[in-house]
Length: 244
Image (cartoon, rainbow, N blue to C red; front, side, top):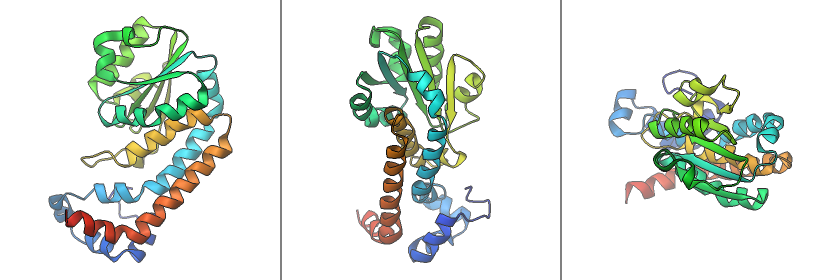
């Protein structure tokens, strides 16, 4: 939800009722919220449990096409720039254990500088590009390079921005599968919050393609746990942060 849309989602209405501190912060003018640095970020932190459920259903709906994308691959590379690269690193070991193949996380800049020399030699492979905006020159350049030089490496893009270069350039390219997460995950704040966790959760589905109900259970449990933390303890967390 845009902070200026005037439409309060259900999660926000519930939070305002249970957390007076949030109601106090959001009652301030947009200009004051921007000056204090939380105009976007507070909402983007608090909305995460609800966004995870939507990402869960989105990924489950793409299961059939993703099975084809992963069929027979010998290795998988997760790539991104900055925090998106770290999102890949967070999910790497889980995917390796579930898929039983070698998986690495590598920055888009490294791929762009060294090409396929930094990738496992066996083919076919899969490269998963994780991106909030999809406009990072390294990520865009790395994907373009792989398409030119490594036709046996399949390409999957997970991005939060349908208007970004990765989504727009490759959405009709038969060599690239593009999945755009919900618009609300495209963080506008300084740091990645909803975008980071939703990219991790979306990539996590690759290891649970054959267990979609397990994936749904994981997403629901995470959402319930995070909701309880935010709804019940956000005031205490805010107090700790203020006193640091």
